[in-house]
Amino acid sequence: MKEISIEKLRNNLMTGISYMMPVIVIAGVTLGVTTLLGQVFFGVNVGKKELLEQSDGIIKFLAWTNQIGGKGMFSLMYPVLAGYIAFAIADRPGMAPGMLGGLLAVKLNAGFIGAVLIGFVAGYVIVYLNRIIKLERKYIGVKSLFLLPVLGSACVYVLSMWVVGPIGTAFSQLSKLAVNSIGQGGGAVLSAALAAARAFDFGGPVNKMAGTIGKQLYFDTGYSYIALMLGSIIPPIGVGLSTQLSKLFFKKEVFEPQLQAGGLSCLILGLLGISEGVLPFIISDVGIIPICMIGSGVGGALGFAMGSNVFPGSSYGFFMWPIVDNIVGFLIALACGVLIVTVLMLLHAKRRFDKNLTVAK
Image 1: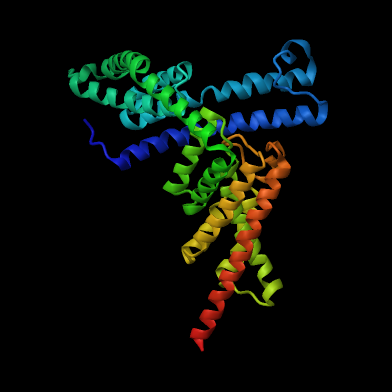
Image 2: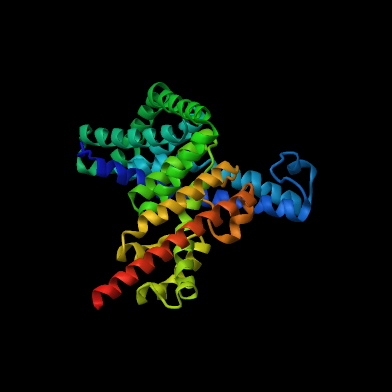
C-alpha cells in the first residue's frame, strides 16, 4: 500500500479540484451569459423548462444552451472531482471507479464531501487490489483494463451505498443545519473569515482550502460564494490602485521602483479577476498580507450581508460582474474593501518610505 501522508492527501484532493474547475467554469459562464442575454435582450428567464418546447429561434437556443449545456455540464462536476482524485492515487485504473463514485454521490445526495470521500476510497481500493492481485506480466493489460476497474467499481457500489453515501449525506445535512443556525450575523463573520483566508497566500494552500470550503458550502447548502470572489479581487485592485494614487497624495512615489512599475499591471489583472499580481508586493513586504486580509474580510462580510452571490468558478473579471446576484450590493462591498486596502497600503508605504529615508541619512 502506498504510504499515506497529509501532504499526499492534500495533493490528491487538489488534483481533483484542479480538473473539476474547468467544468465549473464552463458551466458557470454558460449559465451566467445565457441568463444575462435572455434577460437583457428578450426579458425572459431562459432557465424555464417550458421555453424548450414553446419557444423558437434564438430564445430556444439560449434556453437549450442554459439548461442542457450549462446545467448538464454542471452535473459532471462531482464525477470529474472523484475520478481525478482516484486517478491521482491509483493512475488510470482508478479513473472509472472514481467517476462512478462521483456519479453515485450525486444520486445519493452525498454532496461535495461525499464525492471527495468516494474519490479517495476508489483510489485506495484500486491500490489495494493492485497489490494483492498477482498475475504474470503478459496479463498486465487484463489486470489494468478489466480486473482492477471492474472489481474496484464493485467495491465502490457497496461502499457508496452503505458507508460513503450516508456519511456524505449526514455531513451535508449538518452543513445546512450549521449555516441555518448561525444566522445573518454569523454568516457575515464566516464570509469575512473566508474572504480573509482567500487573501492570505494568493494561490497557496490556505487560499485553496478557503475556496474548497466555500464550494462545499455553496453546493451543499446554497451559502453565498461572494466572499471568495471578493477576497480574490479586492487585494489586486486595492494594491494596484494605491500605487497609482501615491504621487497624487504625497507628491512623490513612496513605493519601491519595481513595485511602482508593476502597480498598473496588478490593477488591470485585478479587474480581470486575477489575483496573482499581488505576489511581487507580498514577496517584497509580507506586511502587506494583513492589509489585504482586512480589506477582503470587510468586503466579504458586506457582500454577504447585502445578499450578493455568484456561481463558483465563474470568471471574476469585470465583464462577468453583471451576472452577480445583487450587483449593487457587490459593487458597494467591492468599493469598501478596495478603499480599505488602498488607504492602508498608502499609509504603510509612506511609513516605510520615511523609515528608509531616515536610515539613509
